[in-house]
Amino acid sequence: MSKNNISFILNKPQLSENIGACARAIKNFNFKKLTLINPKPSFPNDKILATSVGAKDIIKQCKKYETLEKALSEFDIVIATSARFRNKNIKHINLDDLKKIDFKKKVGFLFGSEASGLSNDEISYANYTLQIPTNPDFKSLNISHSLIIIAQYVASIIKIKKIRFQKSKKVKTASKKEIQSMLSLCIKNLDEINFFRPKEKRPKMLENLRNIFYKMDLSDKETRILSGVFASLGKKR
Image (cartoon, rainbow, N blue to C red; front, side, top):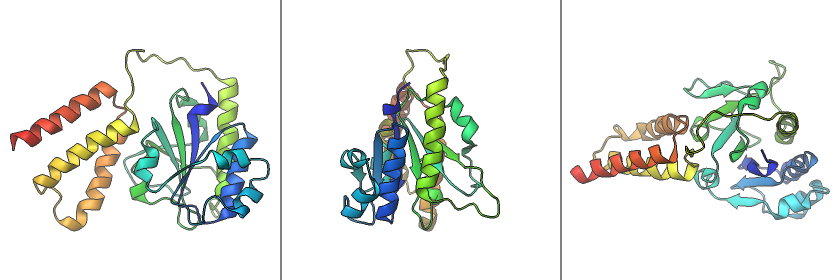
């Protein structure tokens, strides 16, 4: 169980100060990895470096991506944070449930932008949604505050708890990249038979498809089998 397996992902952050503060929070608990997706301010800049204080190394080794899909392809488990309960068929967890997460895998905690958080479409890429318990009449948390709460909690889990897993060592969980490749093949074949009708419903249907595949905990072998099935169906036409 290693802290090097854990990343904190900021999706479309808007303020330099928050990026810097998040880097500082990450280093407070001896984590290493920050990922940015399409940040609004130029990156890095002097304000980010100033507010990161002693965490400039986190900023310098930070990964930056243009799209959510590319950023998440390297993770085995993605946990999306949200102040709102989503009426979606996705696993909703709380802080205590993090004790059940296998931190031997590559885990990414996904945070939305300061103004609007994460959309349902963005959450459809995640395995779980996590809600931090707050005053029900005032749920809004600064992004760096949310991050530091989660970082502290995860750090304490890693320090005090060792988990034995019963899954066979021969079974390898599919990576996000493998699932994305399989899903792309599925979508390609569905597009060819004009499955997504009417066209205006296509985004919602894609969201639902991602929700189905990302929560299934597929093995790499199962992903290859499904990819073969989708490829074969395409050839049959």
